[in-house]
Image 1 (cartoon, rainbow, N blue to C red):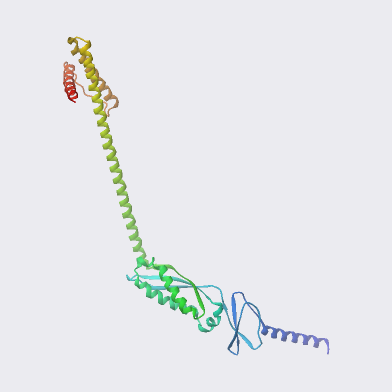
Image 2 (image 1 turned 90 degrees about the vertical axis):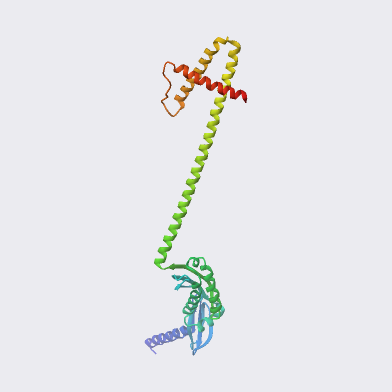
Length: 304
């Protein structure tokens, strides 16, 4: 046997060995499982890692044990005849102890899950008005989960969670709802503004009334003090001066008080113009009016 024959024999042997080894050894990825069959009949389930089989065995298929997610969009109608699109998310996976059922029971498990979700949503949503649908979405998701859990468990699938992620009414309905919400917010804002203005007005009125009351009490106290001071002055004059001088002194006191009052009005009043009598007899007339008023106040004070 020459060298070429030896090399050829070696290559043929290596090729045949590779084919045999490829039919005997195979690997399964992490979080996966393979189904081994013999002439179409189930033999066993192989897990992740390096596995062996006879050349007569075949790999019927491989299933993923990872958590998967299915998004389902359903159009339905609410109790108040509003069409909405409900988006439901289903998270599911194959149970490790029910790989056989999951592989052989359902050919298209996603379509089976979708059918159950459609059935639940289209039976629950028409019982609820649009306004209450958003508040009831968790209850609808729970109903979907309970039905799927009971139905899909026998097929080897575990429903880990169900979520109603979005509820989208018709565009015209959304526009109308936004307009209603805007009108309600404007009405509340107007009511709050009116209440604030009312409180401010009442507070200002109460403050002004209190200010007027205190101002009146101050004027009354001032007048009372003036009358009391004049009374004391009159009593002192009667004792220290002759009767003939009483009248002139009283005139001086009253006129001094009168001009002091005019000065205060000019300094603190809201006007800078004061009208006073200016005729020849104005001083006597002014005195007589003030004297009569003072006598009246003194008589009232003495009675009290």
